Length: 360
Ligand SMILES: [Zn+2]
Image 1: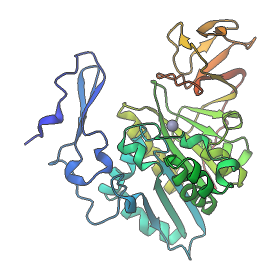
Image 2: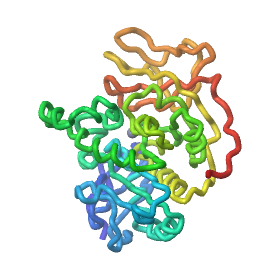
Image 3: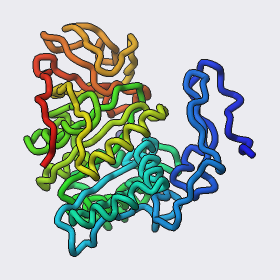
Image 4: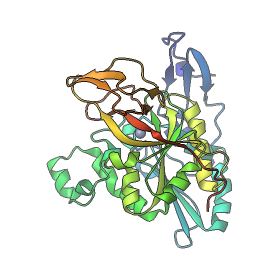
């Protein structure tokens, strides 16, 4: 019998909504049950009946501190290639978590296990911010994807804890920085607050650009990691790791889970199916200041003209500063003071990706 909460009766016909237990994909199997409406249409439902058991294989579970990391492939001693997948660095971006658990449920990772052992590869997957997942928040105390900075990492954390004992994300930093130090390759899986085509963000080095370009998404954004401080990607770059951050689409779009699955499959197997065709260089962020609001609807990868006004804050109108126009990257749906309203992509640097068919 379908559980009572499966359908959100309150949802209006034309509304996007979710109902049921949203954090359930990371919970124990019997609780895994949610439904989602997109423009009033029920698109996908998990019910207890439809679930496949995890069959004793470890999976990610935000309710259990011991279950925030899983490993596949060869032993640590045998590993020649170490791959790290981070999910839920932002707690309300659960597509990566759902994708990982689904791939475990259907036996995909168990199948890969043998192949990884032959290749002497080890894959580590970490549920980065479990408490924020349980609270269905971007973060609990601090934006985890802004504190990968020497001030937080290299300072004596016990001193910081003593003065501000409630900063939950600081307690996750040592685990995550250790994992980044451990890996050769890293992907960090996110989703966005507004509708957007999936895209990959890469650090500004040739190896990472080639690596990022081979993910099955439409756009690749370069140079963005230079203007946002304290991200996982920035820290990985400091340690000369090859990495990419993948934005799989809108938080509540079920397609984002599919994208996350494809991204994980590509990363673990090294098989390139499709790749990013549009490369946009991003060199400026638009920070949200006091009094910020949009003056028009701004959509992801929309082209805007020089001087076109998009919003305003207490300092006045916010218009496109680029003479050649610009492309809007990652516009926010929920403006948060001090975070980015969007990023400016530069037209003149938009180039077509070169044909890359394999990755060494
Ligand atoms: Zn995010």
